[in-house]
Image (cartoon, rainbow, N blue to C red; front, side):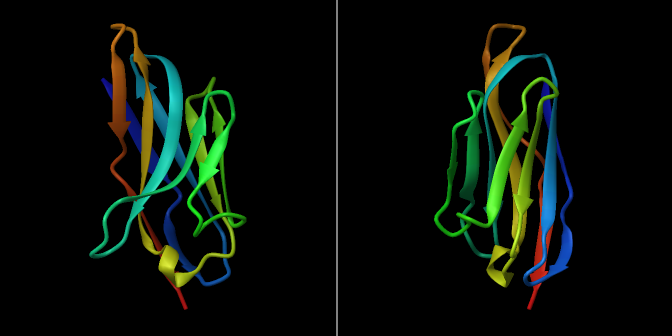
Length: 120
């Protein structure tokens, strides 16, 4: 009932940049929080960045000052601008959204993930 579709992943050299996008669709009344997570080979999924509908943001220490999360709530889009990428940023990046549906129920949905590979 709520779908998230990520795009923008790919292969980039260390020091390069990528911009990830995530589009939410479905029976959404409002989105309260959107976030990006990542999972590298053999690692647990970790929070990269989160943004609330009011605009407040938080970042993992490993990406502070390099990554920027932003949201267009009206269009139900969230972005992750990633600069100065490092090989250790290589992972599958997942979009997450939490909010309320037209059925007056809370939802928490995940996208299918997009691969980011940073070569040294």
